Image 1 (tube, rainbow, N blue to C red):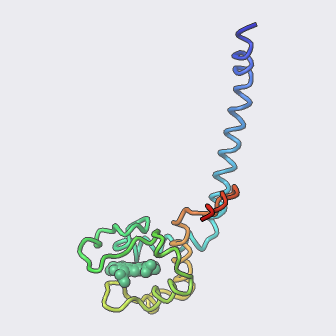
Image 2: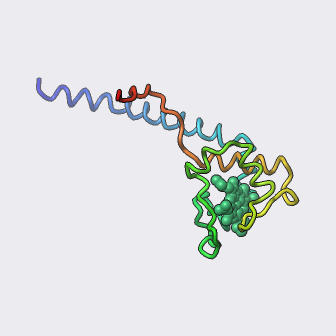
Image 3: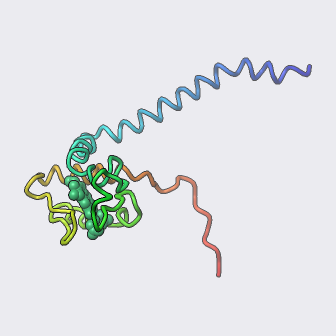
Length: 140
Ligand code: HEC
């Protein structure tokens, strides 16, 4: 009975296929659940209108104005930005940074809008702690 394993696979295919579909569907609802928390959605609108010209649509520092600026707008998905606390980034968004093109937004954006835009910036960073346990560090 050589072809049996193949036949089994063929019979199992619809089951496997629907399992994959279900997983994908669950995966996508999972991600929309995070994105649809209003805050990020509103932040995205603000970011695209006010910030993307310098920081780029995905925050990578590649907006159309970026090549003409010195210092250049940084990538907001960089480690350098990610390690900063919400307080640090909020202060930069609020007051701007002296002698750079990054101006303060406190007169144009409400505190809530600035929080929304920061939430959107954070959502662009795709690093999460791994679910699997990490290998122990090497002993010296
Ligand atoms: C005219 C161009 C320009 C616009 C528009 C702009 N930025 Fe910036 N932004 C910069 C530049 C340039 C810097 C880097 C300043 C420096 O090198 O110290 C910066 C820095 C930052 C930083 C600090 C990143 C870090 O890790 O130090 C944040 C956060 C930031 N911008 C957010 C925003 C947000 C949010 C908006 C929209 C509300 C915005 N920027 C709009 C040019 C811009």
